Length: 250
Image 1 (cartoon, one colour):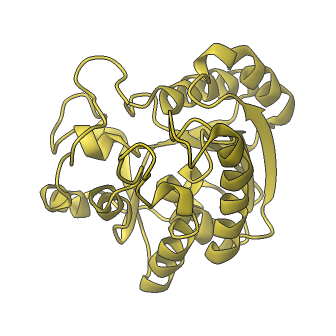
Image 2 (cartoon, rainbow, N blue to C red; image 1 turned 180 degrees about the vertical axis):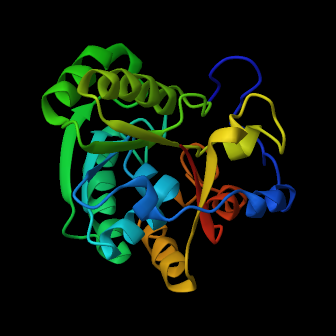
Image 3 (cartoon, one colour; image 1 turned 45 degrees about the vertical axis):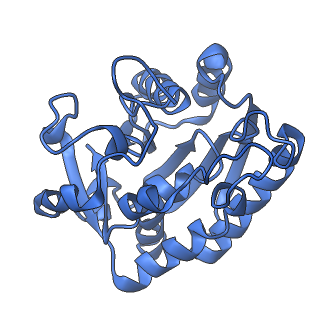
């Protein structure tokens, strides 16, 4: 979905092979990003963003005995416009269920989930509601993890901007995670703040758990016969999101 300039989420995007250089980014341990006693608040625009963006990071935090809370901003009812198969009503039921199953598969089934029910594709229009909720919920010692403000998807960018406001008011920390930027950008793209990028390494078992969690999002992985559209998450996108590491912007 376009979000200004040429950051279009269409076609195959930049091949994963082109991103081989990301393996040289500085590695960082989750404990260096979230100290003992701090709470991690993952703010996900849609059900699946928490897994796609930072599922491995979440798992490593839980293994390090850090508290993790998931804030599900929307129910993802807008992922299949015009579909007679995946109608908004069905998606609003199924995508939160898929998210719960994904967390179980990841090994994060006990994570507290706060579902806000904002309208998919319209997070920016509901900024005051999300900002107000975060203002009541966040603590000064929290670390918020959300999608990057420049990611190219309107809801992802809105969550990033709103969280930035909220953490400034609360006095807590924030990390941003690219998701769709890997599709439209390229190595060395000056629009990406590479100086802030850090790499969180995943073990084979952690990566396998993330893969299993992604596979729970059935609505996003198949073709839609009623519209002729391919998967929301095609193989090309999955290749970029199933690296043996995740990238956060510190």
